[in-house]
Image (cartoon, rainbow, N blue to C red):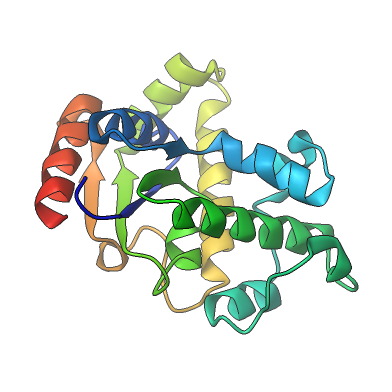
Length: 206
C-alpha cells in the first residue's frame, strides 16, 4: 500500500468478518489485529486474557463518550482507574492498544469499536460485514461448533451485546450503512469475493 490506511471491520456474528479481515490483510501485505489486542491489553492492565474477552463488551456510557470526544487523557492505566468499573478499565486499555497499533502503520483491525476510537485521528477505511440470518446460523454451526439448537440464541445475544456496546456513542448506529465506507453481504457474495472486492476498493481508495 502506498499510503498508511487503517482498515476497520465491524461485523455481525457468523458473517465471516474475521476470516475476511485475515485474508484481506494477507492480500494487502499488512498486519492483522484481533485477538492480539486482548493479549496486549492483558499486559497493559494485569488482567488475564480470558477476563478481558468477557468484559470487553461491558462498558459504561460515560467513558465511551469521553473517548469519542477526546476529553479523556490516556496515561498509566492503573493510576487512573479510581472509581472506574473493571469494564471501563478494559475498554480504556484496549483503546490505548488500538491507537498504538494504528500509529505503527497500515493494518486491519477487527471489532472493538476501532472505527470510533480512531475516528478523526487516523486515516481509516471502515467496513461492515453482514449476512442473512440463516447463512450466519449455518456458518456459526460449521465454524464454531455451536449446537444447532442453540445457535439462534447465541447469534441474537452476541449481536445485541455489540449493538448495546456501540450505542454508548450515541451518534452512530452499529450496522447502519451510512456509518461505514462500505457494507458487504458476505452471504450473497461469498468470503473470497468479499476479500477481492475490498482489496480493489482499498487499492483504488489509497
